[in-house]
Length: 65
Image (cartoon, rainbow, N blue to C red):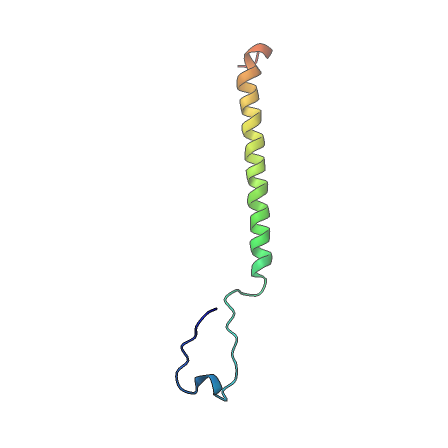
């Protein structure tokens, strides 16, 4: 269990309770779309790399080189 060091009557102040948001509105949506875009870019790079590798490996047998 955590321990809190509350000094004086700060826990009982009549000031309004303020929520501080660290993430802007739509932050998760932007993060998710950025992650999806990065995944698609990685998949495309892997596909291109696979095609280049296939051409290098099988190219001489097919007369491509």
